[in-house]
Image 1 (cartoon, rainbow, N blue to C red):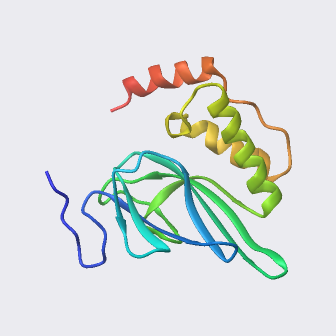
Image 2 (cartoon, helix red, strand yellow):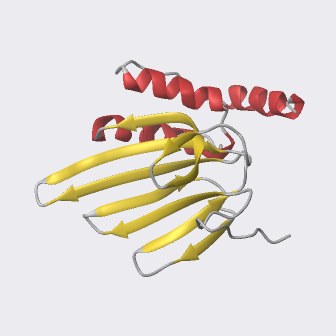
Length: 164
């Protein structure tokens, strides 16, 4: 079944993310997640779409001649049509925010945590939402966080099977 494009550019049932890449000026990219569809607008911009309930990471960075101006990471869950959600820049209609960090040191800590998850052979898009919330809370206050273990992941996968 083909998703219909609505007047605001969002495909029914999917979450739209606007990405831009202008080297050392504005860089918005997907760090992880299963993209359902993609549309390239031009050399610098593209639209990507995520199916409902998919988790993905969006990194937003901007800089100028003096260095980094903005560094942010959002790890979010794409919502179902009509589901309540929070507004997030460059994501339509919005998303369920699991982790949201500002400032390069905190973004770097989150990226290292994602690298650690991948090093354990776990897809970050399949990680428990509870872990992303834990990571957000601990990094936001500069406290150590627990690593996501294969045992936790197996427990989450079993628990997810029981959810409606």
